[in-house]
Length: 238
Ligand code: PXP
Image (cartoon, rainbow, N blue to C red; front, side, top):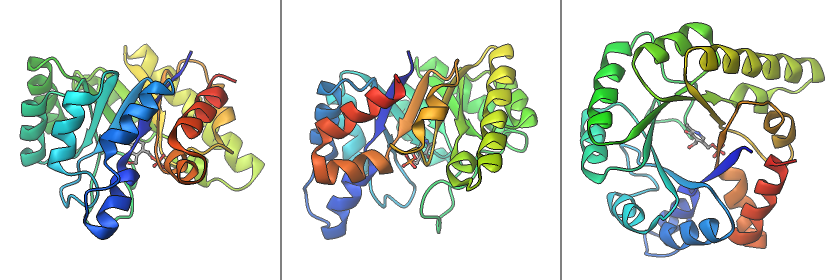
């Protein structure tokens, strides 16, 4: 059975629209957990545009399920992860001007740096996943860093418009899964997944964890976080 981690960054985005103290992502995290989520994911960006240092501290203390911290490989953020000790970190590329994470982490170019981070995280008992495009070179480079898992970037699938393009991106995810599993990695997936497009990806065996944010928080604004989380879990499990 594949598991759902709800990315609650955009609960913090609503709060930051007024720079006030509501809604608190910790409230949302509790409801997601009560609704059956496997874990809670947040991205502590270097510009702190949504999730704050305080959020990460509070969530570390209050999340009873899996706490997955998405983060760049920049040293100040790595130090925060060492101090906070989430259950898992997912290493992502980060550009200042982007609306959301664009593309995957370049594990070939950054292999040495990632390997050093993996060692430091493992010393603190933290699992490491790398967010990458389903590309053989990057998956193999990831495996060589000693990380535990890869999160395959589903953005190309989410953006595909024609049936042919969709099938091509699904095949790329299946191939990526095969390479990752053969390399001894756990396989996660995420980015751009919605209630409308999750079914074909959820059917890919071997993808054991999905990180989904924008679509769930968008639905939660209208139907509530509990219902939004439960509906996505139902779709993931067919
Ligand atoms: N996985 C990773 C690594 C991400 O960076 C993001 C966006 O923060 C997500 C999953 C969730 O993407 P979305 O908000 O499109 O569901």
